[in-house]
Amino acid sequence: MRHPLFASFAVGVVAAVLVGIAVTEVASRWIFFSLFVGIPAGVAAGVLATAVTYAVLTRRMAPARSSE
Image 1 (cartoon, one colour):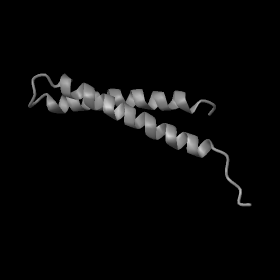
Image 2 (spheres, rainbow, N blue to C red):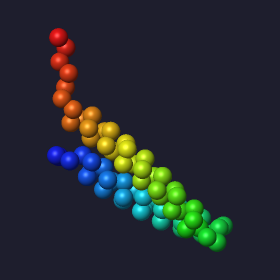
Image 3 (cartoon, rainbow, N blue to C red):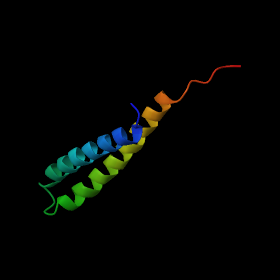
């Protein structure tokens, strides 16, 4: 994989959408404007997923250090 940033962004978008929808649906029983809870939760999950995915992909792609 040449561009870990693109893959990280794709994972972040998918995570944001899935978490946003899930939180909105779960909160809709108790909160009338549950979308106002789901959107920030989705954004936070997307940012976290993007950062973690980028860190994992760049760590695996980094050249191995040789012990001298």
